[in-house]
Image (cartoon, rainbow, N blue to C red):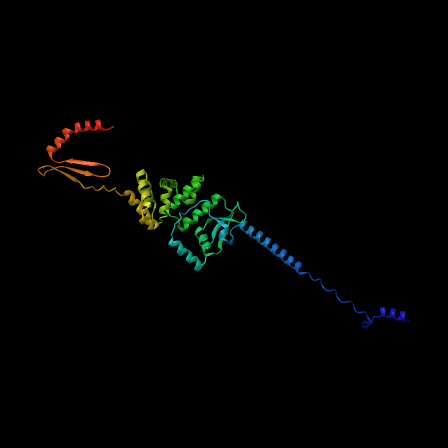
Length: 326
């Protein structure tokens, strides 16, 4: 009877008599190490995807990124003359600090060092960001050397940041690196005549004089050409070198330094001062005057008879000198 009852219970349609279903099995709980590994893999996957996305955007065109200034190298060709004390740059840094960087710089990936960049333009913004300890906003483009120098020159020309001597040195540096003249002219926006004058100025003025003077933004082409012409004699270069050591030159700003060099070269050497000595005869008359400097002695014979006497004795004095001179 018991077995028949059990069988009837199994075949019965009464829900109350149905056997209760077993409770669901709990989800397996991962250990702390496994969870950390999962988060790490997920983060690495997201970073790799972000890097691929950034690389694709950079290759496709402009994309503004935030870069550590320490990862950005200067351009391979300099376009500025360093200045010891630049009050304008100090004001520029203050503006960046208060208002932020308004215009991004342009960089290219450094093909020689993974993860580093080379700036095409925006050196001042890059330097200001480094001083302030901030990242620098930058547009990254895969530029060739020619594209880089054209972009570098164009930005400076558009903003009128470079002085005449800085443009001259920029042209010369590119010439030294064997860039085509046509490329340099395109970069600087000059014709053959202007290009020739730029190179003449850059090569005619000694580099130590240019560095000492500085960019001199208020000095244009005619005065730099004038200085190049004035420095052709070796004596003029000596005068300029002497002027560089003067305290007044070191205190002056870059524009005034140019003027001091011009004045030093143009100055006429002052005659050495001397104290003439009179030769007095027995009767009190002035027979001659002797004027001595470090370089020579002048004998002026004022009294006619004494002059005739000295001249008549001159051959004998010469003979006596020769006999007593080894």
